[in-house]
Image (cartoon, rainbow, N blue to C red):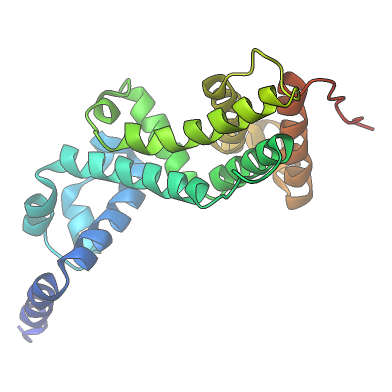
Length: 227
């Protein structure tokens, strides 16, 4: 043997001691890819360890077991999406403009997060069992509801929004457009061709989604012509 394997092990042990947070981040990055590609049952801890800069033993040390790692991955993808939403400053915008900004941002954020979409689909196969175990995700999800609650409250107070406007229902509606656009991309393309996922058509669909949400919420909003 040339000793290269021993050197790699030594280098990895050194990295564990020097920067454990970087090691955890590396594990989560690879695990996110593996769970998104293969699901909870199909992902292999040995394969995850092989692709990281650490070892199987250290994965178990940081995350307990495979299910613990999967839960951490779920929390990570939700945190990434919600952090992007948190950076949106809409509190000082007029209600209709604020709602438009949130719709655009949600549509674009989902389009840029295929791993999030796949993991949510996988978690639905598990009936949300692992997500329910998380104490972090409900707190993360609360932030977008609070933003929409503020927008709805200000919109109704100014006589711009319908009295029945509801933040949770709005979030469901906005997420439906945004999620389906990514979750069914492969099957939709196979059935009807890829044109609808071109940049130009995606821009149009974002506007369509915004228009339909505004029509449901904003008093007197007239949807744009589809001509």
